Amino acid sequence: MTALTTPDQSTVYKFGAFELTVSPRILKRSGALVALPPKAVDTLFLLVENAGEVVDKQYLLRSVWPGVFLAESSLTKNVSMIRKVLDEGNPGESAIQTVSKRGYKLNVRVERCDAHEAHPPAASVRQPELPKSPPRLPSPMLPGAALLAALLMAFVLYPSRQDPADLLLTDADREYLIGRYMWSKFDRSEVQKALERFQRAVELAPNSALAHAGLADTYTSSAILAVGPVTANLSRARAAAERAVALDRTLARPHVSLGYVRIMADFDWRASEAEFRRAIQLDRRLAPAYHGYACLLSHWGRTAEAQQTIRRAQEIDPVSPLMAVTAGRIEYYARRYQHAIAILRDVLEREPSFSQAHYYLAMSLGQLGRPAEALPHLRSSRLHPSLIATDEAWLASLTGNTRQARDLLAERRTLVANGADPVVMVLPAIDSGEIDLAFSALEQMARAHRIELVSLRVNPRFDPLRSDPRFEALLHRLWPD
Image (cartoon, rainbow, N blue to C red):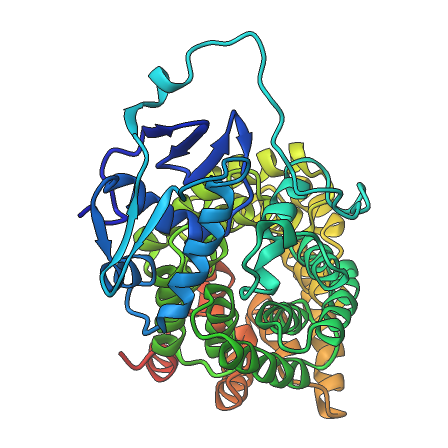
């Protein structure tokens, strides 16, 4: 029997009015897209590959859900969905035969061919067939490809649905998908909007693992972007991510959310890696799983692995600006500034207001000694005013003017003396040459496992400290292995 990792990714299987492509795994009827959950399409793939033979139930369970113990009911639901699609408009004997106590057999003639043979040049291309009368999503929120992705994802909030005719967007689906669109901008102004959408999705579907995962990701993003209290946001992120995983351990996306929490809130690198790897194992076509893992690997200093992993995410989702920015950030952390600039400029050609692209472009230009070019991008990033002020002082110091950094440091000293977090002093102290003060602040941050230290190992902004033995000792405490 054939496993899911078929080496020939260009193969197309044709049977009756249907075509099943191997990569990407897509089912079409008479050229129109058929909306089936990914696991159902994987199940169909194995039945098609072994057409005319009985495919053992346990083999199907092991192949479609590797490493996961599931009851046979999950497989039965998948086969039921496939049957209704294949048998629609064809009364009589079902295309899929149940063989008692053994498994299932596909009783149709299957032709295997190359994608170029299956799709010769044609005069026209048919549009995808969407579910009957779906509720309309607001076009400004989910344009183009995002709308199609939303429709294909609609089933995920309710994995128990069996009938493809039920794959219509509910109010909870709408709130979740619009929330994801807002969240994917990774912009301070959009985080609160995304949070409200996910909160409504949870209210409408309290047992939706995806809705809780969306909440977790938004709280984590809020902590990263300094929107609200960091500690409270990370605590809420942990609770939501753990709730999401508890609701459905076989769903990949909650494990991605928990992977972010394990590093950002718990500073547990190994546990974070385990969650991202688990997500990839559960769904090898989930781009956010590779994206999250690439972020972790990059911060860990495993640059080559990070570059390879983010490329995989971009192969799956080539239009995501967030993933492209992450690719640029990985290059920035690798001190490959020209590569980072090329990637980030490309993002801004497509998404001129994308906050993170502006920020890492400014940082890359600054590292190359081009502060005048960097400054407009820094200001266009719309990040927290404290961070903007810090990096503006750094850019000024690159021209030999350290007064701005020294004035800022004096101001921050006063703030810390009055109870502000010492994190606000670290970079101004470095830029002013106050190395002992910088280490004092870093020590306080390390004891609290502050989220800002996640990039300490690779961030070029800390390079002036790297030759000091205290820096290596600090890294060893945060990365003991």
